[in-house]
Image (cartoon, rainbow, N blue to C red; front, side, top):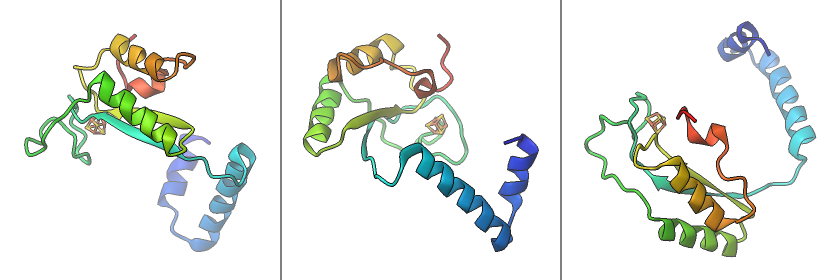
Length: 129
Ligand code: SF4
């Protein structure tokens, strides 16, 4: 979808036109994942962030937030618990935390699942390398 078309859809308010968009989205959803529901565990490994996204409570300027960063053992325990609860996969999520090195995160991922692809670029935000 071109940017101009996307912007037009974001501004669209007429139900009869939105119905077309929703049908297209539902068709894409059914083609991609079918009707099954896939549950994925989300582990928030750190709420530190060096960014200033205005809508987000984790932004660096939010001094009222009590910050935390999980240890590797805590993350592994959560992943084991998620597996016991029946989640097939987990996502590790954090703010743009300079205290989390790519190598450290990769080693945590390998400990959770030795066969896993360690870190996908899109999961690392906009960090270099
Ligand atoms: S956690 Fe993400 S959305 Fe929130 S301030 Fe940081 S970069 Fe922005």
